[in-house]
Length: 140
Image (cartoon, rainbow, N blue to C red; front, side, top):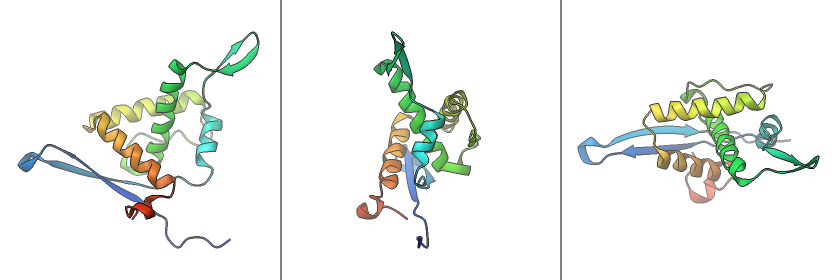
């Protein structure tokens, strides 16, 4: 199969403050490869519970923290060497990915990022991974 000559990336500018006190940091996201989310979900599966011996979906109170951790894992992979939190690896277990998400959150907080910054990164990540970057004229 013929491949693309270059891979897309997206540089996100986050800013805090205004005027002379304005600070800007730039972070570059790389798109996840095809099948990455499915592979991550196999290694870091969504929570389930058992009722009368049958597996059923976990309640929303368990799904929301899981989804946030899952999204942070994807974001961390996309940021690559821009973060110092080490990626758990291809053989990691669910606890490793949960710990990774927690450590990455702490690193982002230490860097001064707030919830709005992280949401902006998620939004840019989603656009890049869904291939709409070119349509929006934002992909590098």
